[in-house]
Length: 303
Image (cartoon, rainbow, N blue to C red):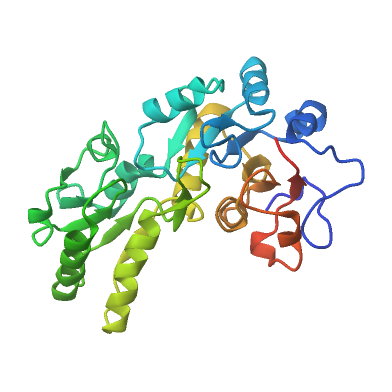
């Protein structure tokens, strides 16, 4: 971990003269102290179909300054083209190339494992166009192919849960060696119905199956790719290294997000400079007595 940034006793840097908004910090000292910024999307940049305060202005400023940044998302169901258009529709000028999804890591991950020739079953969707095609793998989302697949990828979206989850469960009982890849580890996500209700995430669906297997004495072979797991952070750091060069310092990459258990915990684990914004799912009182692995280095009310 870089010692470039001052840290308070409780691991949270909250100097008395700190601005309340991240954009003010960036304008004054952040642009000189940081080398790149990674943003979470939901709860940080936008909330449903509305932009969060300062998000549009900050993105415009970063682009004007040619300051390296990416949006890191655990959304493996919407392509960067679709996700960026939704953000542009609410006034935030994000392009597809500004987005890194947990599913972007599939191609490199599968090649590192030497699994290029396996047949994959994708449970649900990995977007349109599919991230599975981007990963250049042999895949099917036809439930008739579950039992013959060499590996299972837990996608997202709407599908008939009961038959597929039961078939996956029974397949893994019979073939516990079959690896399971979960691009999006999230347990739940905010529905866009304006009611504040939550949808059950791909991570929760996968862990439901894994817990049942453990109850039967079977330990599944599981790989998570998105936040807070290191795969997505390391993947993005390699992209930044190509942009910035060998002088890239992981400790000077800021991970800005609203989730202690996802954005902050994951960024801390790989040595990034973590920044919590209180514009999403985390309230200020949750910062009391949190463990070091989930303690941000800085806290702002909003972007």
